Length: 431
Image 1 (cartoon, rainbow, N blue to C red):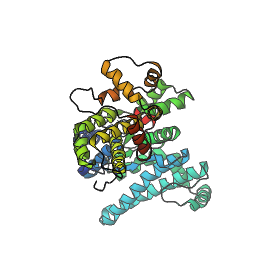
Image 2 (spheres, rainbow, N blue to C red; image 1 turned 45 degrees about the horizontal axis):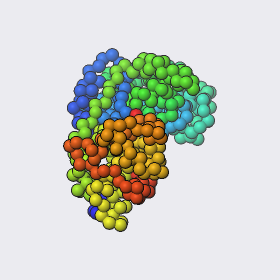
Image 3 (cartoon, helix red, strand yellow; image 1 turned 60 degrees about the vertical axis):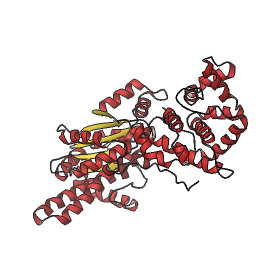
Image 4 (spheres, rainbow, N blue to C red; image 1 turned 90 degrees about the horizontal axis):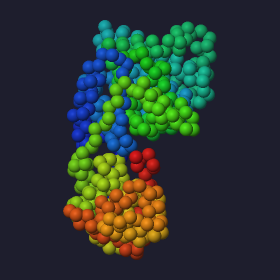
């Protein structure tokens, strides 16, 4: 077998890298963002885990920059504490603005340079005001911007003593931020992309959303937020309802915050096949219609899940080859077991203890009979398993899936998959 490489989970970096058909959809959304006059505007990019929200937003950011609309990116999941998050959000925006203003000032003629210098000075004052707020509220280090951690005490003493201008920025942050955005964009709009909200803790995610309203809510900004709608609704509902989330109030919170919900267009499975078909080893397996039917049945067109599956299957094939080249039949068995381990880890454990359960599920599907006893309980505890095994059954018309493997084969393959199959998917990843 030729050398294999692991598939990364990196997002598409821009419009030129689009492999999923996002570009046309992104152009339509960017046209709408550019044409909207009633600002600020908050857009939610809704989509399940692994479906390409970051890639889609990267394409949008690239398109906006091509139109000379300033766009800034913020990743809140890097920060744990509430004070860190709102401060990092503000300082990220102000720092990116300052860097761009410095560049523009160095390239500008004398007439524009003074105006840019004044705008830059205001940006720095706002950054200091935000740092002062953090210093008053928390003893931890600063998370970004112009000030180092050891500047906090000196800054606080200075501002407390005499800096009336800084106090004004603290007390009128929203208004001053609105004015500086107006000057920075020449009366246009600033687009802030907030990614991976659903990777944050629930408290952190809500802190980010609240910060947009409290600190930045009067400026000519478009906030584009990538999120799994269900995850954030539950987070907001837990804030409202405590240990028992109030999902109705959570949904109301989200509806009030998100002016326009944009549901991520699905990735065509054909596009995923074209991109990944050459990454499967060995080549004879890559050309198997049964393999791609298994992938589609188990993972749909979820790019992240499919990449993880192919990584695990390729490593399993390489491990099997240490003894002898595996047949396509054996690799299809390995693929089914890998899908079960990723999606239904508790069933995978039962299968290790009772390898014959796969055969009994297959026979029940072929004869259209009910499962009985413990098998029925296992099926109820693992909804979806019976459908998946039916989709890859040797009895299924139109495909040539092999019959279930014998007990010895299952024990061999499950032992290998505990090493090469990676971690099972978390429950939210299976939704």
